[in-house]
Image (cartoon, rainbow, N blue to C red; front, side, top):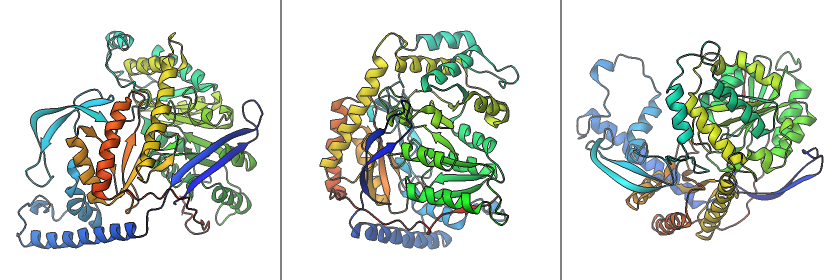
Amino acid sequence: MARTEPCVCKQNGTANGSLCKREYKESFEEAPLYIPVLTYLGYGILILFGYLRDFMRRWRLEQCHMAEEREEQKDFVPLYQDFENFYTRNIYMRIRDTFNRPICSVPGPQFDLMERVTDDYNWTYRHTGKVIKDVINMGSYNYLGFAENNDESLSTVMNVLKRYGAGVCSTRHEMGQMDKLQELENLVAEFLKVEAAMVCSMGFATNSTSIPALVGKGCLNLSDELNHTSLILGARLSGATIRVFHHNNMENLEKLLRDAVVSGQPRTHRAWKKILIVVEGIYSMEGSIVRLPEIVAIKKKYKAYLYLDEAHSIGAVGPTGRGVVEYFGVNPADVDVLMGTFTKSFGAMGGYIAGKRDLVDYLRNHSHSAFYAAPMSASIAEQIIRVTKCIMGHDGTLSGKQRVKQLAENTRYFRQKLQALNLITYGNEDSPVVPVLMYMPSKVGAFARHMLKKKIGVVIVGFPATPIAEARVRFCISAAHTKDMLDKVLDELDIMGDILNVKHSRHSRTNRTVVYDETNIELDA
């Protein structure tokens, strides 16, 4: 998928019943043809040298023997496929030093990193005892800047920690129900403008355990091809049939829905018990925003249900930070299941499910994360309450509103400057997730090392998390970033863009014809 697509999303039936219009601009620009050719050629060379190194290891010609299987383990069944092992030891290990860097401070707009070195080609590390101070943080999901350790701001959290302690030591159905959790759920429901909400102690588990409680055998799950792993796992655990539609492609989604309604279940052709459309608000690897008004219109037309994951969008978009529902002016009641996490904009942990009261009450008794898992601690709940009240203005200040506005300004500024540098970026112009394409794994590694030398911390992403020829650097913009911080990052991007030869943008609008019958994946339980 590669396109730059300005369009206007229209939908009847918004909160006030009027026509909803919003200009929708997303960029998935294609690189020149020689770039993917050279990228695949680079992988070919790496694989060739990998086999050569394996041969040398077998004959004890390789200096580092960490990649060799221990003698006592050779009779065990392999835990991983051969190519996965091969990729890890011969390709990933070359750039492993750019991943999993340990921080030793609050992950705010700047953080401190523990210095580490390796003596065996990235297989193991040792810490030198030194700390790299004041590294600009361009990787954390600290969208509104609430990852902070200000004593005045956190006073209520510290008081709750002293009163309730750090843990709960029980499930909510036993001795783990607390007044702070009830207060938080009521506040989340008010914030999202829905009837009820329930909170869970882990965002990933909120998805992976709630979806199996909503659909099962005889149900159909229609999933966007770029959905997060937690949504994919939840769909697979449910036992429902899974069909994947092309990212944000309404024609493809409607075709699958039409076929599902007409043909019914495979073999029996009985009507599906439920059809659940599963999408995200902001897609965390592409920076893309869901086309929510059109999806709502389609789901109403075919009487399907809609599950919306707002992990990266809640707090980050919308005039008052209420996510893509507010961003498009959609009535929250038109989304059957609203899900989000507190690990990004709220600087905390956990997730929520919100919607009609009957839905929430059902999930309290059928979702495994609600029934069996220990709830979040009272101090974490208080942090989320503090942040939510700030965003809503219930703390008597305009701080929350200013943070939302500052994040939007920082996002637009950073994306516009990147475009001027002729770097290829993906996603929506209002998305604070900003992927910059580097394509080759050697380039992302070199980029991350150079940026750290300049005291800039970045996140690089490659295969298998992305398509093999689309390795990238993913920047996460924060309201806490100053203009000077962003300008420093942009200056280094300009320099490294020339050195690594990644300035491939032609600012062209490329459209590709999608063949809808080509790759509709279907998994039967």
